[in-house]
Image (cartoon, rainbow, N blue to C red):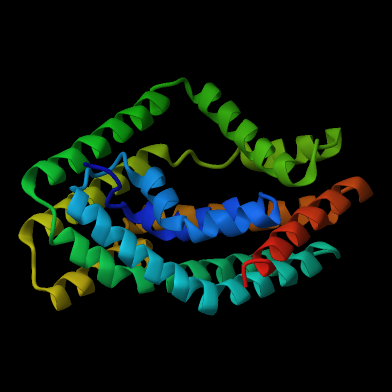
Length: 287
């Protein structure tokens, strides 16, 4: 039997968050079931990246169960507090600094979980054989080709798609945007520099370093240190020009988000508050 997988950096950071989000979107009993079976869910979420042997799968399931036990006792209360705090901020007239604070807190929580996962990730990396590493490389290449296809589209199309993605994200939380909100969103997003080429180059750089690290198989202390360098946080190794523009755009998004929440209609505010409360309440059911 060959199955789950070894995650690249964004999957490492987002795996537990995805499980928590899944729980929050379901009824209480289903949330508990999902969280208690996180090992299986993580396997399904990651199985495109590396085919594990049955022995590796059993080992991974055991480690995931321990991670979930730690996350449940140590992290879920922090996630609940963060969601409640975010809901309170969203109920008023938040500034960009408020959005930045919420974003930074969320990243810190993700980083703690990632740090907890690193020893097990390092141990798993040392178990991979050459065909498994090749499988991972091929998956990286397939994903990169999809990004290249998007980059090949006309600039106007790429800008339009980016605006639509942003609109969909806001509407998933607030409901349909008003004409004024949609126009404001477009006015802020359209001028942003397209970073797809720089993002792809950074992916190539990270993937090369990650695969090289697996192949060299350093001893565990050195391997964990290198993983921490690559993953916590990943921006340390980025091209300075790319990182500077990415930071500028993140700040622009903080300003946009604050404006959208501050200028939300009563119905949009109520929807946003309900969603945030629902996440917090469902996480509470898991404690």
